[in-house]
Length: 168
Image (cartoon, rainbow, N blue to C red; front, side, top):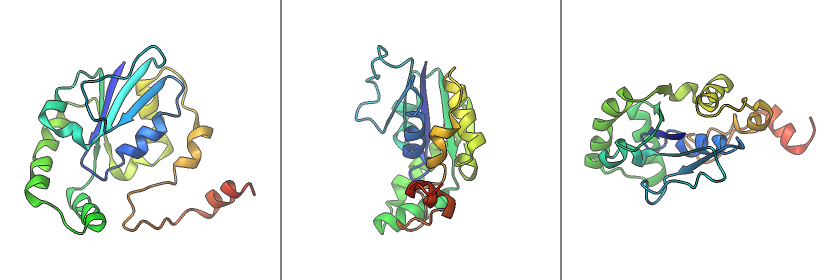
């Protein structure tokens, strides 16, 4: 199965690609240079691509058997981009936003950004792509790694930190 995961920038596409790559039969490339080049299927049964570039018209028509759209509030996206780069090209941003409703309408699954980092949401995405059961133990450590925070300093859950240190 070919699949795609798309969103506005700073909406978790890199994170969900990393999570999906924990599945032994999934290979998800984040923001490939050429979206028309598919990952060889000889190793992976399910291959896909994720990123904000998929909203561009030439990628919206990508041959995907299953598509996911991560819906994040456009003001939050704007603020997140601005926090990283200090400025945002408002015309380019408006162009990207104008495509989101049309793209999302054609997707098989629309995920609200505030639900993306929940075990149940990740399991639903995983199991919609692969026949292999969701491996919560593999994914658990990543569920707290919301990289879309306003600053680049992370505020990890104390239980998560104990697991990292091997104290649990």
